[in-house]
Image 1: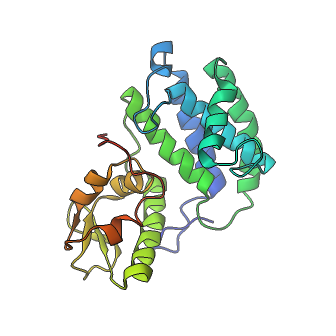
Image 2: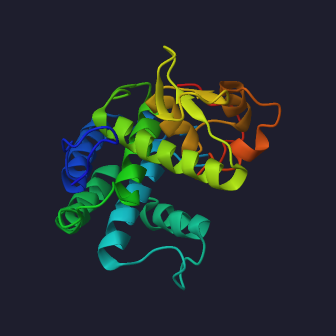
Length: 239
């Protein structure tokens, strides 16, 4: 059961979060015309909207089959994700969506057995939903409990890594000045609401964007080197 960092009340299960988000993304994609499906996705350089859907389908299929980076056909993360795009290039997007639904029905059964933290496959889907929304000008769900939960999990990870590496603490502070992760008494702060933090830590913000949010230190490197799970983005991304 997935729970918020500051509450004992369950928010949802990974399986339900994945299923609900997949349905939301599928509905969004089905509403798009061919021009929008071919639109570039700034957060995923070189990919179109269709390519992101192909990647999500490939992730679900590989997760069901126990395949990931390190396999003979895709030894690196980059080659693994590229394979997803290559496999569905030239296939109609609605056909790809049907395959995603088929694989996801099996994946969601597997996820239903998971009572631990939100798994990577769910985080990946939440992140790509926002990538797609930004690409087609349909912002939404910025304040969803799922994204807040993911942000809190990743913030705890970051705070722990910074503490272990530097022996210093850090506070993650929302735009209203309220600390929502880390040590609220720390002079070193990272000012970002959960959505912005979630996007940054998954490489949807540039280093310059992240550095502008960090204060209380003259040396940002010990902090920022642990922030990005992927990335940072090569250029500023505005959403």
